[in-house]
Image (tube, rainbow, N blue to C red):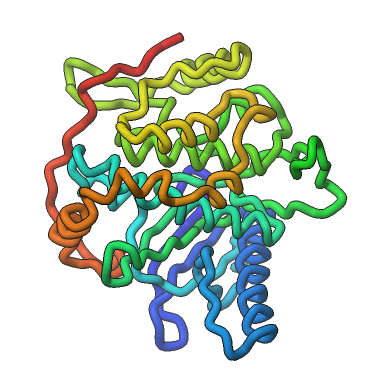
Length: 337
């Protein structure tokens, strides 16, 4: 059981395997059900508009099999079990010299998935390496992005949309899910924040994890253990308050040689939300800006990943993870402001 009371289990439902999720928080349950059903309906509408055209969707989400409420007050849903691996599972299997290339290759696909969610009228609210999944389709270029865990999702109703300088902005709303290490500075200082710009920061922090192996804030390297450990909650709070107040980040440098990737990640993690890049900017960006860096790693990177994932195609919770030696980041320290 998670700290927020969420319970999960793999169950059999109507002859198929499903993922059971139960929460005592009705609003989180309703948020996820609403988002998943709306996205599913949009796919049906697309097909009805053009039944003879195969539509390639940038966004894939789990399908809801059923929902119910328990006698002890838990709100539950069962979703399909899809085949894929979270970024938290993928990235430790990738050697340090290939992490940069993998991140550059995936950045545009993930951005398009999140932007597709925004265009359907929802924010995600819980973007982390644990909620973004990648589903190999057989070759390096054929990759499907799957977003999960929509309990922090919120509707962006038309009446809450404000047009400023020709760009769409959202009136502030309270954040529902606050994953440690991936929340923006304003989450630590304001009761309500722009949820679209919050998604931008969380996406940038997830890209940072992909290259560095840990979140931008919230962990410190302990020399005596030669490993990263969480900092106390009070220290994290003070650090994020200072970032919000000064408008200056203090996390260790992002480990990338790709100048385009570095630039976009830093724009996503601008401390002040009004200066932060919208994910749509990255979703619409020419992928060649990132891919030229990946070309020389094209074959070796994918072959390397497949050699370390002999269980590709099997849900991660149904198998024992492959053995690997995890090497912690020893080149930088968490910088206290």
